[in-house]
Length: 231
Image (cartoon, rainbow, N blue to C red):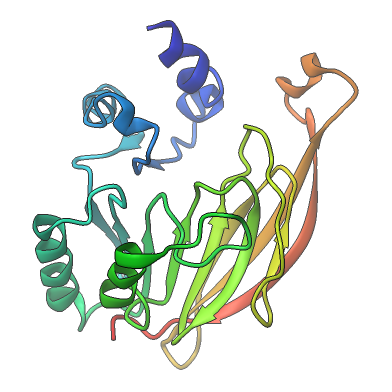
């Protein structure tokens, strides 16, 4: 469709055409549920470098473990799968990353409340090393709760929203940007992740934005986190 091309294939065309074949790992959010979120599963089947076998799934890079969650559906089927997957992976995972659309804590307006907050506290907080979210339109390291570090990266293109204070050691910025993660194995055998928060701005014209080097990026904040696996 026209929207699929203009809102997905065109903005990410460099990924699809790259000789390095970088992989995209998809997760769904509230806008996807306005129609059929499983459409992304069908789209992933047509692109070798797009991964989305289900609305929730896991992918392991040796002993670095990623769990993709559907935060629109916190029902018993996904919960049972997630708890079982964590239990069977506990011995092998030295660094665990979970990610889903909605944040647990946020410097924006969408921190989890009520039953949603209880869900995070039952399945995420204190059990994985890192949780990555979007939804709020800013980019941030929101700090740690019970050893789980929380990030928001939702400033990819749509209008920005204001941010307020973060937890101690946190950082949030109301600007377009993104977060990178690099994993390193220490001599002790533990895995350390270095995160970097960048903001971006376009050059003189919108035409230059779509050319190589069309944006200027600025490193705004960084840090290192030590993995403890699944607790």
